[in-house]
Length: 160
Image 1 (cartoon, rainbow, N blue to C red):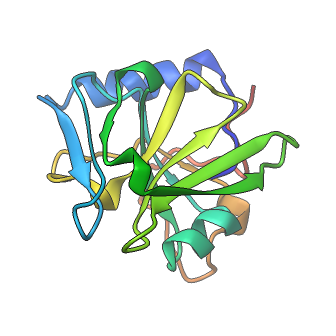
Image 2: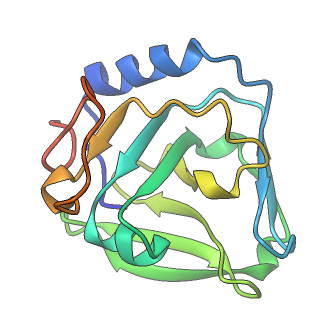
């Protein structure tokens, strides 16, 4: 995931929309169960990222991510995580953490926003509450993808 801008208005709007959905607990795991995570906090944002790096990591057209406060995320089996170190458009690092046994992408650590961790939503135990509030890196979206009507879209990162 490319590093997101930190425009308060965008993140605050995302947090408000997220708060409308009651999330009792964020929890998930990799495909083989060697890595599990949980957070008692509400997500700070939910987004669909269309950057090329997310497309490659996810093996599909985009990645749906849920940002949580970094200090709230508890990881079991952290010794089973491997890290791919990349560089975002800002020139700052983006660490993509994945299970070394099954290869499931678990989360991204974005140096530009150290207070948040970006969980890959496909690893959530129950993703039914997800309501992504923005699409980012839309300039990289696949030409066949149609954005939902009224969706908030950004050519790259939100301004900030």
